[in-house]
Image (cartoon, rainbow, N blue to C red; front, side):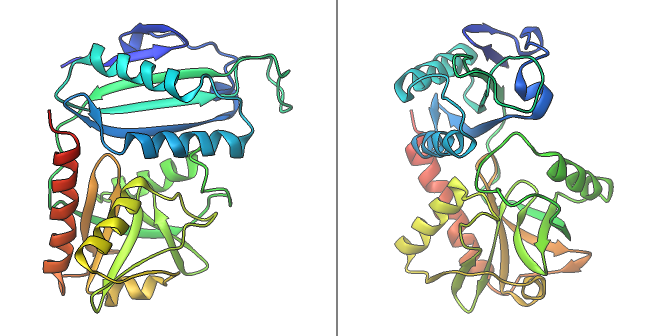
Length: 281
């Protein structure tokens, strides 16, 4: 297995790539990123990830490192160099390298692009997780996929210390999303998920699940729901691009879901089948 790193035209092993100390990603986390699962050299949902990447750049007022086709060529070059059957493709763009101060650097300072390709086995088709809840201590621009993940990291570490797989954020008692996932419930045959507003990242896997619901004839409601509904739902699911949809079996030490495993597994199966089809050799 081999990992690949890339930075502004230089490709090497990730631990040999050197990033300037004054890259604004280092000083401020001033940038955005994307990641997708790759199988047979094909990134699942790659076009949607690139769409969101450029939306995040626009929200942050960062000049893109390159146009879309050039970016795709760079990503493809990195994936080909890694030559792994399954991996995670990650890329990020920062506002550039300049003396450290809060004001943006001059307009002629180019942005920086970093890429990694890391081998990873396929996720389980019907994976499960155990989670906790925690107060959402992030800011209100969660719709941009920025590098500023310290609240997620700190909260996720609490979960890790407790032997759990992650946490679900709550904002004034309302479920927003997970530390690295979107959160959904199934209730009476309806798929319910938080609206795609400034309090969540509109996940690519979330979008695939909405498409899957339409294909399977499952009604969808995009509406806020409370922590209490996590414990009364027929099933609770989380979704992320590098792990797919997984069912939640426990939250805050209490067993959840299990009342509609058939529908939850149907969603997982349909997602996995789409993944395999779109990434077949």
